[in-house]
Amino acid sequence: MTIPRPGPHHSTTRFPVPVDAALRAAGWRPGRRDIAQAEIWADTLRDHRSPAGHRHAIFPAAVEAWAEFGNLHITSAEPGRHIAPTGVHIDPLRGLHWPRTLSDLGRALDTAIAPLGEEDNGNALLAIDTEGRVYSIDHSGDWYLGPTVDAALTTLITGIRPQRLTRTPG
Image (cartoon, rainbow, N blue to C red; front, side, top):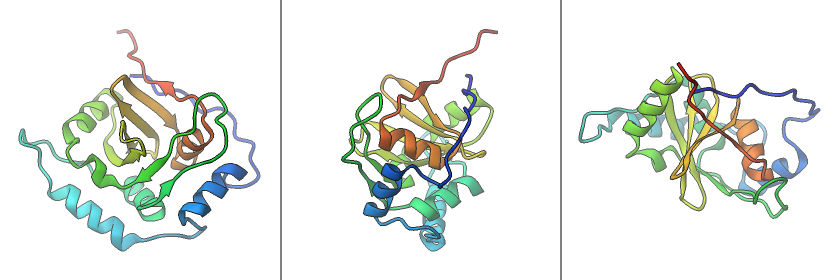
């Protein structure tokens, strides 16, 4: 699969205004870090094994994302840029029973993938790789949301159309 290349980033603040507002309304603030909760999630995921023996990958980028954004339910009242904004619930246990799917995607992308949460409608699982890139997995395919959690949240909250992951020939 091919991961799209990021475009230039010209923001002078960490998040665009509507994203910052949605995050703060959900309870986020700069410096938020609940490492104790992130470690509980890491232990729970590490201890889980699918019936076929698949296990979750646990790595620093995932743990840091869980620590900063974990347990947030993020929504936006703003209209979307390309599509309707998607609410987000950051809770890696939403992907507890997805280790095989995440392992398969990771193998296709040549990286490890961990669960991040879900789109609030429950129709898509959010996942993060070892480099901090974020993906959405739903019934219609695998989607690239951005090179960082910040970019992915911006994509979802502002209704930017995500990019479908595609297979490269060869």
